[in-house]
Image (cartoon, rainbow, N blue to C red; front, side, top):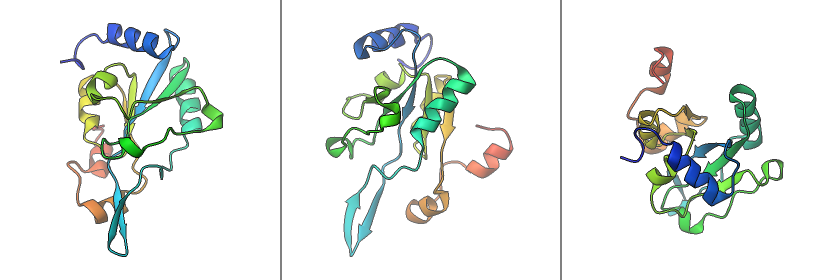
Length: 161
């Protein structure tokens, strides 16, 4: 499987393809699929994230060193209508892989992974990359979608992360 074992060649090939420095580090942001409804009409939304991506990159560089980039991978249902995320503070450091066919071939080139509730965090963890869960709306998510596969609060307290 592409996520297991040494991924250095995959990362090197990806960096060349994207014109990134060899020593660049990339964090994939892959949020879950979200939808809502107003007056009985369902709609999909994708750009309502509360993550401060400029601050995230700055903190990754401070904590882990190197120059970090952010790779967006929205849910396949959102990909056709997803416009590139723009942020002048991190211009040139954003990669949009939402149109790519295979999540795992892209994930294999990543150095870290951040999501809210996507189960792909398990694959990233199996690939031995750091996984960060940013769940700032967990109560609303549970109300809309139901319980998660795991108890974030309890597992974090026990050191399972």
